[in-house]
Length: 193
Figure 1 (cartoon, helix red, strand yellow):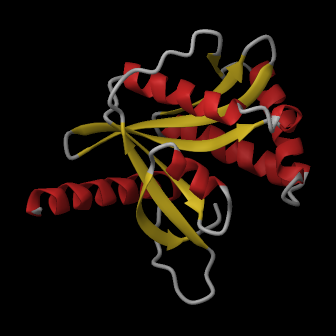
Figure 2 (figure 1 turned 60 degrees about the vertical axis):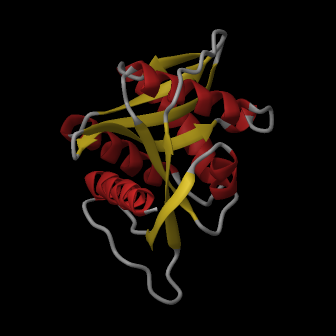
Figure 3 (figure 1 turned 90 degrees about the vertical axis):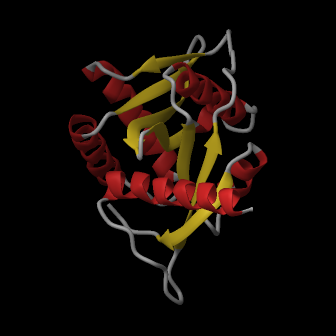
């Protein structure tokens, strides 16, 4: 029992560390704050998703296509093109400063995107998922499951032991991640970039 508590404590610390890498600060939530849950999952085996590929976003054309898809995604939540431009600028900054890369989920077309931050904490190599999205034209087809399995497989092949991510506690993705084996490790105040 003591060993389980110690392991859970390390997982919680690692989840908080991943949040601080991305956002630089962690604030405990207060009354009325929008709360974010930090979740984690052990990677125990490689998942093979043969017909789907993760394509590394590197070229200016890739980033332009990602930008155009993000404009549509963010519009669903009241975001503007200026918000997306700010978001892309932050993503580029993070890519320069951290070991994070963004990928398209791709078959014949680009269907979605995800960021994967690789990091080490207390001797364990882990990953942090960020900006997990299926583009609106392809939503409702089960491709979120495919994207998540594909990035988990990539993380496993990169010898990462755990994956972490954040989700708003008042939104459906939290429960979707939990159905995919991610356990809630901490709750923090959601802080804007």
